[in-house]
Length: 345
Image 1: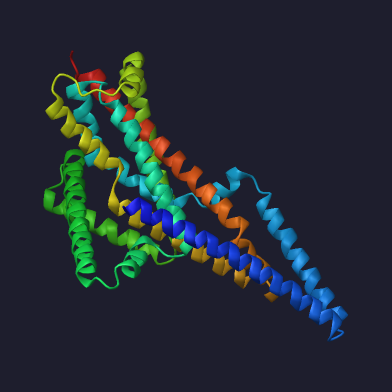
Image 2: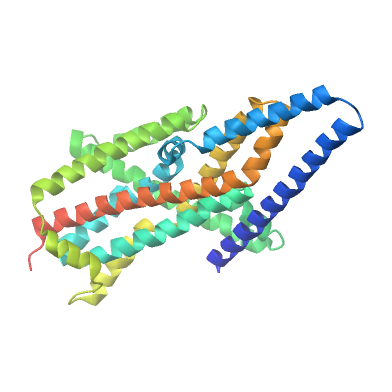
């Protein structure tokens, strides 16, 4: 039901964008024609047309940029989203799956990553086409149902609190293991680093994104090094990834499979991703409009309402797919490390 509504919003907004593109383009052409014939301002109209041509050339230059350059310039939102797929709780589920069932549950990582990629891509497309995040659209959709809105708010707040409590306590335990700090002091440090991130966020998310991306690279490199020195059974890994099965104890393995699914497909990530994409899109449009003339801004708005939306959606799809592919590899490495070290058939 939710996926169908997201598709309906996407299709309706895309049709509206194309119709606006046709109407505004024809209106602009008529205005140039009237300007040249009735007012006799040939020079002025030529200057406008020249400016429009320059803006079109500029947009063509942007469109001719490599796909890699465009994706790198907007790589932040998906990276922030993938943090939830690599938090300590999710990695702990991977360790349990590998230690108890070996490589047999790796197929759940594959299908969960595909499902997460599809849902996150729809969420990103929704923000690109509607210029609104998922929370705003829920408020519009259920504006005549205050009970539903209140329920969504309560569930969201409870989810945020439960998620943050687990992260704070987990950080405190990690600091105790590393530095023998007491748990209460570790909780204070965890709360302070959250405030530091919020402080840097006031100047934009770029610094926050870079810091998180750097930590993700360090984490991934460390796990891949452990994977190499653990020497797991590659053939068993491929078999466990391709062939779905729950093993001799389906009840316990199904619980771990559900845990793996929940670690990669999370509702709060859908809200977060749509908000981040909307925030990045608003900043890009504001920068574009503030650095161009009126005629150039007009042409830019037409492009954003037409072809550039398709390119932006395609880039978001590729970016999200790359990030979920990377998290799939890292999670598989954790399962393989645990299976190689602790599993005994």
